[in-house]
Figure 1 (cartoon, rainbow, N blue to C red):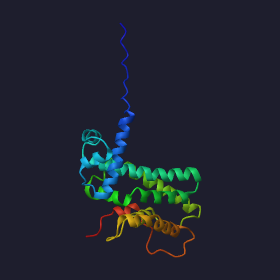
Figure 2: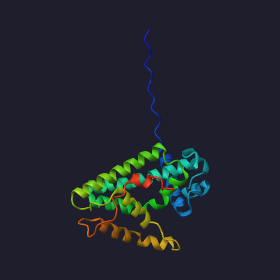
Figure 3: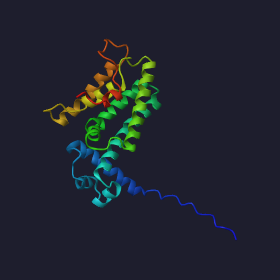
Figure 4: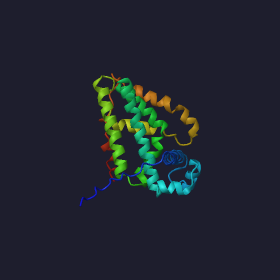
Length: 217
């Protein structure tokens, strides 16, 4: 008697409307986290996304899961901007510039500190997105340096500090007014990265490991 071969059943692909709902939730959450911080009520996020609370919790069972997805999606989009620029132009400095300006548009300066202070920064999804982004930026900076476009005394940490600081409104200023100047100031910073360097920077290039090292007590 022949034994029937088991039928392989693939997991059903999410429906297009389910994917759209998830994307709308992530977009609304990103906007509201930037505006109000990570403790914004999730029912307000659902309302802005135009979905019910049940839909939100079906996609993201808790606040940590939603914050994690928002930050991962931002890091993935900024990495993609650099990749696309590098593919389209072959110009490493243009890819670096695209990454810097996209990071500001995505409000990285407001989102990333939430992970560092309130959530599990060592979650595998976060680490995977972060490693992909850092490796890409290391690669782009190395190519720009080898092409004589980027000064030799800057590291990825220098870049990330500048993007974070320059896209964050100073205390006592109106966010909407400062937003109109962000790309102007980022471009000034990018021009300062170009080789040949007109001056020598104090200290050594800052790495991401330097930024993660605990401060001395």
